[in-house]
Image (cartoon, rainbow, N blue to C red; front, side, top):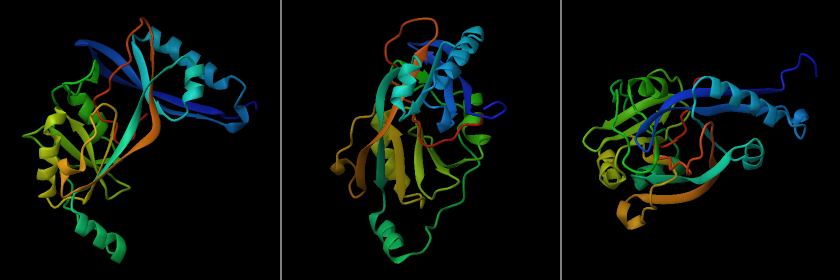
Length: 248
């Protein structure tokens, strides 16, 4: 296998808050391994190199989202909460008409305006610092993500993937305002279907969102994390993962 690329991985540095303390974390992305190398310890060895690099560069925690729990656990990661996919059809008649009778969904143009920073989410021990550099990386310079609408009154950001007509609830400050914000979203003429990938938000009841249709399913993806220099409780992530793709 000399000269053959057998694996890739990347770390995306992100400032985080752990119990109010500012730390440097890194999101693990693009961890891919050639099937020919499976079972040979290559995956764990790749992360051994990453762990040494992270320690040398002041990274306190490496985290990510994956369905490949066993390889990450073997490499030294702890396994946190499972993520759930919430799908909310905000205008059922329009959605059904488009789905069963064809035609494209009419969506307003994307919005060039959006938050340059947002307050930290109120729940959980671990949360990303949503400052200007975070929004620049995650949205404004991200070719895979477009901002649709920012509900400034309630602190909820709605975005869209460039490969989908669905809208995503991507950032939120206070979960208690989400139902009210979804109601306001319904009036904007934006996509009829909302998607959110979440870990900590309590399950909605259908009556809470009526007349929207609501479905919550397990994604089989889990938070995995590794603390470099200390033991810590399982991070309760409250910044939504959505489907934003990173830029390595």
